[in-house]
Length: 302
Ligand code: PRT
Ligand code: ZN
Image (cartoon, rainbow, N blue to C red; front, side):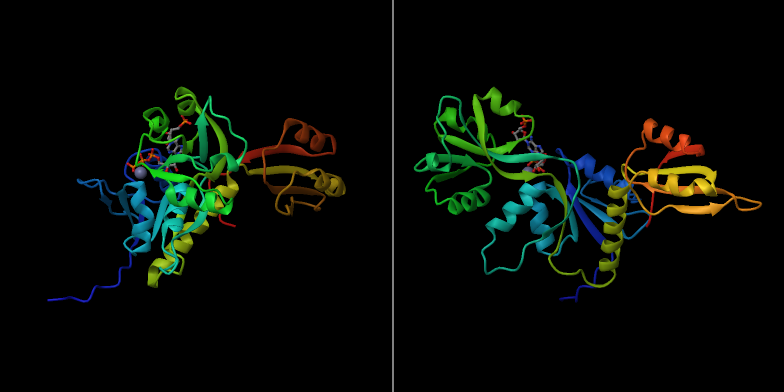
């Protein structure tokens, strides 16, 4: 008998089970206040504090799981998300979108040619075979440049394809460049700059999940914005205020509070976007500031 499925009210986030993005994704979610129970199968971890659960999967499956509504958000490389979108038939529903870059897992999808092969721009690719695990992104890039090349789709070990005679050149992910170097290949074009991103469905989530996702995104933006921020506190005479305010580093408008008595002494509290240098502090001291204090920020909700 078919039971109508109850509307899911817990948010489900997919991250890589292992691999390069698994632990940084998990660390990020913990920094955003989420805690998960360890499960025996290590595929599904139930959220402890909030109704937000974790699904541990292969990175390649994440865009599809979001598109099918099995998961609501995902942490995945832009390369994987963009390949999924580029491979979708145009008539199908809209693919998941990038909500926010996350600042880790940086790499680029690049074309690389054997050291001995000449390369003088995209026209040199005409009639060549290019091995890649990203056929849709590469196909779009070639079409946009009117290049006729054969795409050889491989699921791994792309860098040895030229030596095995499967292709003349490759299109693969590069970070340090050591793998290319070890395989006597040189990078000639960057097709896509990538990093881990928070992926979400193209339309708003239903019910309670929408608010949970919105709140998580707000925490993420606050955490990213505050990474370099500092709280600067100092005391001064009110008569020195104008000169001191002009010396404050970039940031939010400061708050000025009268210290006891006649109100001649004030305490200034300023949220600065970046670190405050010793030189800046010394200039403020010369302008009359005292008790200068610079504090890192732990958490912040604007
Ligand atoms: O099992 P699962 O399918 O989940 O994992 P996977 O093996 O497909 O992915 P994984 O863990 O290797 O990579 C996950 C994501 O990390 C990628 O989709 C990228 O978004 C990101 N990332 C960042 C990288 C790299 N840097 C990277 N250097 N992914 C792969 N590489 C590989 C690249 O393919 C090449 O073989 O590392 C080699 C090149 O590195 P360098 O430093 O020698 O240039
Ligand atoms: Zn993968």
